[in-house]
Every structure is written in C-alpha cells, then in structure tokens.
View 1 (cartoon, rainbow, N blue to C red):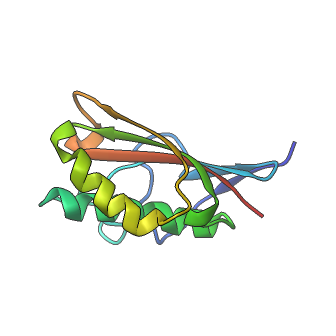
View 2 (cartoon, rainbow, N blue to C red):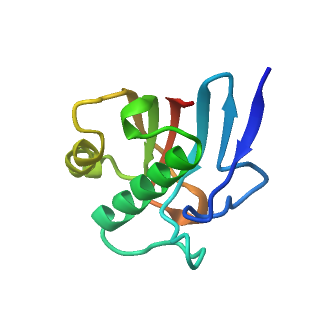
View 3 (cartoon, rainbow, N blue to C red):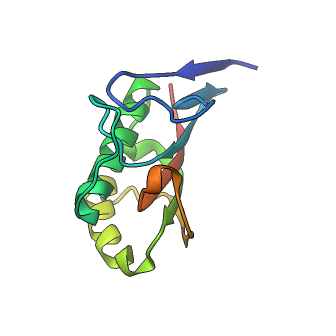
Length: 127
C-alpha cells in the first residue's frame, strides 16, 4: 500500500497530532479544516462567509498539494455550530464546487476546535 503524508505551507498547520492530508492508493483523505489563517496560525473571526471561504481556500490548497483539486472531490463532510448558516454555506460552497457536486453530509455540532463555526473534511481522487 502506497501511503504518503501531504503538507503545504499554503494551508494552516494542524492544531493536533494529525496530518493535513494522507495520500493512499489514488485517494487523498483531507483532515477537517477550520477557519485558520495559514500565515499567522490564528483563527479567523468575523462573519460566517469569511470563515467558510477561509476553510474552502485552505481545503483547495491541500487538494492541490496532494495532486488533486476541487473537481476531484468525491465526498465532503461539513460540521456547523449553527444550522442557520446552511443556506449561506450552500451559496458559498456552490461557488467553489460548481457542477462537480461531490457526495456530502452536513451536521450541526455543539462545538468545534478553537471555537470555530465551521469545519470541512474531504476525500478526493488524486494522481
């Protein structure tokens, strides 16, 4: 089995003992991303839109570092601390994924690391 750790300085360092992503046998498994500024390592505060875009931009950078892209994502798991943000999330999410539309689940949770409002993990095909 081919297994490689994927890390990029264009996305935030993990906040715990895990990798940004693991590449294995043509698949890329991306750890949950919360809204952290990759340059400062600090959580992004402010409106939900800013936080969601930060997460999706970080996800995109990890995908690219792993030899993949948003159009190759097959499964996404989204965690929200407030389901009232669901419609806004869908609008932003559509801008990033367009017509590729991977399988997806979205659940409301009581709390996320660093008191984030959103976390997204993904599985994608890769080179």
